[in-house]
Length: 338
Image (cartoon, rainbow, N blue to C red; front, top):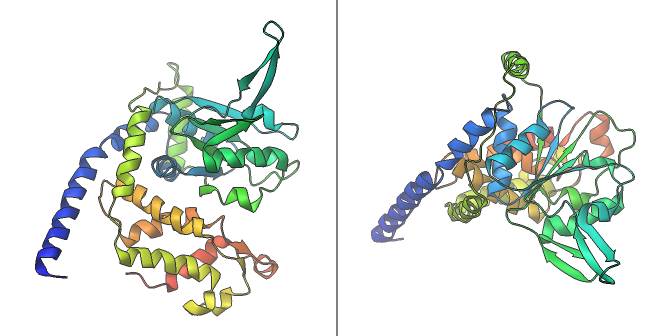
């Protein structure tokens, strides 16, 4: 590459960086609004924003009472989007989510009654409580952003985001999510307990006689759609692309990355959807940090959330109490950082 080309390239990146910095200002407004109702849980809020900006669905796993539902509802309100909550139960039917054909006796015709899936933000509460028939009804909506009722296909509203929660401790009456569906979640976020000072603030906030703070719409859905276009413009160097490929391929062929001990611990590696999700999530993370380019730390920051549900562990790994988190740590420690 000539000196002129290098100079032109650095100028382009500088201009892009300024553009992203300018257009990502609303992120601060959004986070300030969410902080009114959601105390702590910075990691969860950040991951919800990444999912929204990268046009990916998010699976939240944590014990009850950790503000999962509150965070999702607050996000929908702050963006002035339509919110729908679906409580998943063993007797739920696909029509309860998608909608169905209803007969009108006056006109002697069937008309479509749309279900709660026709909203911007779908909270699928305790998603692992519904059987496979219901889970499969979500697949088309999550992947194709459309729904088929009878012989008609309907496009879903944009932005469209499925934010699902599941309880990891109570397994009675639950169904394990199919791998095909789990893979369609861009991120799986594990929610932990708040710190002591944060919990003190939560108690005071909930005992406040004036009630909880009101969330105001500070962003419009159209702004999110524009931001998604800008997220895709965030610069990613070829070395960063190679870093993503090395991480993902290390989950499939650990021998080639000097990780022979992982071979018997991994039953299946991450899919190509993992590579796409890792790149998009890193770009969205850079956007949130108001940068116009991706650095290796961005990849490492989102890596666990993108990969933890995409790596299958063997019985040998379970016998040794080794989970996908530890496998990802091993890979990140060995794969060369650009």
